[in-house]
Length: 411
Image (cartoon, rainbow, N blue to C red; front, side, top):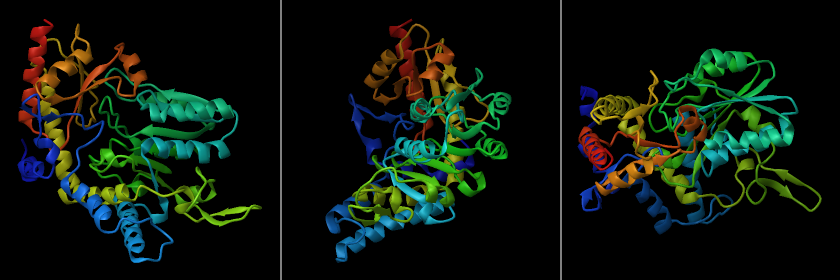
């Protein structure tokens, strides 16, 4: 492993994650399901416990001390997210329940009010279902046309096809930064520039990106960007939508209720200013505070070290899995994150998942909410080992040993 990786001190890092030290079937856990959700460092749930034990209260409007402290902590996370993404202003940061809700918010509040019959929405063949279904629903309602950028058998978008599909009719490009099922890192900055040249807006699904590399929304120049806290070593049930203020200001609210209003009468309601216009009701206060702690933690580790560590693990894992007879990796993009999806011909992925679980190893099996990807490769499902900076080469070796045992059961 490289010097940068060794500098990370993975052994020390692992002490920050209590879940890494449990046993499954009497064996030390190996957790390779990070693309589904990451483990949380101790500081995250300590921050959430601190809220519940010391100043649990609703945020905004309360003038008592607990509410003011809760509000300060809640809004401090908004500021952390702004700096984390390099957004121009904290009002461009909207708290949601996760990437799925963030994308639906844009589809509803922007799409339903600014797109019309015949307008084209461009996505890719490798999108998560959460970046397919909302646009299909919008197209059914508004008469928009959904077009799909194909990818090749390496798992890379065919850029020439993207350029061909991108026309003056394209009003929105909604593209995944890093594929959850292939690990492909898409050239989103280049795609955003091309889309803007055609007058289209761009939404980036960064759910799989923000925990693995630095994401700068001003450098990308994306119009919207979505991510989930639980894939960033933070809590479930909280996420973020970033949007350029000039767009968010002209979009109507997604939900109606408390905290998103300026004034309510039976004759007329006026809405609050950004970002509160999109945050109706009591928010997930503890989860937002936990997200702030997760961001602090990731930044303390450092993205340069995280990327170096995970790329080293990816290279090691790619070589190691080749020791398993017949194993075929699905997704071999030149630019790729630490995701190892594979099949064993003659063995259903669910059987693989069950047998490696007996060895204390957690992988993900299924279509990974990317059924079009499975269709492309002509398989019903894959097995996926998704790695994080707290994983080790020794854990990869254990996966290989477990897969060799699978081969003994299914020769």
